Amino acid sequence: MSATVSGAHPPLSPLAAARPDVTARSFVRRAGTRIVDGTGAPALERGVGIGTWLLPEGYMWGFRPAERRGAGVPAQSPREIEALFADLVGPERAAAFWTRWRASFFTEADVAEIAAQGFDHVRLPINSRVVMDDSGAFLADGFALVDACIDWCRTHGLHVVLDLHGAPGGQTGTNIDDSPRGRPELFTDPGYRALTVALWAELARRYAGEPVVAAYDLLNEPLPNEHAAAHAVDLVNLYCDLTATIRAIDPDHLIMYEGLHWASDVSIFTEVWDANSAIQFHRYWAPPDRAGIAHVLEVRDRLGLPIYMGEGGENGTDWLAAAFGLYTAQGIGWNFWTWKKIDNPHSPAVVVPPPGWEAITGYAAGPRERPDPDAAWATLLALVEAVRLPNCTWHGEVIAALLHRAPVTLPAYAFSGADAGEPAATAGAADEPWADDAVTIRYTGGDPDVNPFAADPAERARAGTFAAHLRAGDRIDYDLHVAEPAARPGGAPETTVTLRTGPAAPSGITPTPAPPADPPPGALAVRLGGVAVTGAWTGTTWRGSTPTVPGPATLRIGVEDGAVDLIEVAVR
Image 1 (cartoon, rainbow, N blue to C red):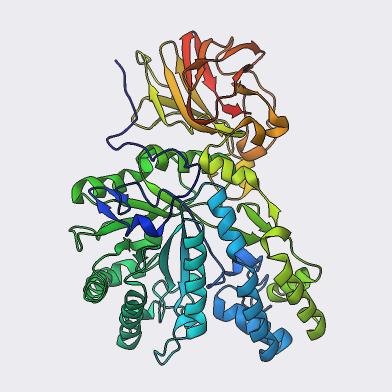
Image 2 (cartoon, one colour):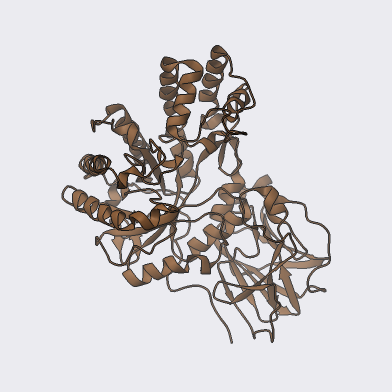
């Protein structure tokens, strides 16, 4: 018997070599369970979020909670970060800093690079306080920033998803929405609700005729934790009111709805509220397997609406390769969080903190004295220069993992499809089914109660080892994108495939030597893009090569005899 994990929906389309004219493609819309542009071509397949530009979040700046109660200065939400800087350098200098920050952190150079890397859209988180004051008056300077992003994306062939990340009053009650009192007052104060409806009416009025804008993402991650049960009905009612408000002005744009509890709970979606809509979910730090998104796939099938993974990331490249490869294989458009952060390797562009930055973060956390105002101002000015894309450290391995673009190293469980031969008579207690039971994933070793998919590399280092257990007749596929030889290190005319079957540790942690699970290794048949890869075993490593053929390709690994516990796949 055999099982296949290709799923009912075709995968996302191959990476485009160039972005076509985004305006000529007309409005993004729903077509059944897919998101397409006006020509019927797939849209919103691969994107990145522009976090902390218009809504700064403390963790992306390296701000830590106070080390002891009553110490330090809170610096997690935008309001708190703004207050910290005003305290350090005075309100006039602080205001000047934010103007310079927004002119430097995200520019046309960033958009050009995002397009060049193969992405097709950006998701733009907006804090309501940037475009609307507390009285409900709209702020021209804030809308000018949104307009600039749209214009840059028009120039470079990208779409924009407008994301209300911080609604008036706050939709989460946490630091990520800039709520004034740490409560989701959007759902308890009629005044904040009215401001939110007015803001979406203004966004619809401004962008009703703008095809570069792909979708309206009404609320980011509403009602987490205990707030979900208390206000779920209020959220549904608000979504319906916002939809009616927008549709009275703008009949064309796709509307996106996020579920409860960090956009992970989709139980509120029991009917279709708008024919041109999609359901957005977010996913972090969870097993990157099909079972983990089964509840979202069920909503897609039941309602006949597209689903879109609007936020995921903050993790090592193993997890990124598996999770985003899963979405691609399942035909789910996605958006990576996030493009750029300070001193955090989980983003493609990483800001190198300037001298003096540790004094500011240390003061916020509590153990350090308040920096001298002039020294703090010099540090903030240096930070404005450090955040420019040319001054950032580039982490291309993040994008390689997201796009499965060679050169890349993938964990064995990051496969896109598999066929299984005859099932084993029994399964060990540690064996776990993965993706429709076609392949058994063995997880062995590690400390108990450790999340092997945690963002913290120290925690992952204490986790066990995953291996795809393949027996005679089994076949496993990996979807890849192979670059032109000229773009490869050294202009290599050949592509090398290396398969590792020994024990491994997550995300670059050096493993402890141990014998393979099933010695000796089995006989393999390896093909890249339909072409046989000639290779041989050296101990627990199989290595082979084939002439480079650029473009999308499937790496197929079949076991002809014996058994293999595959740990890692590297394509160079």
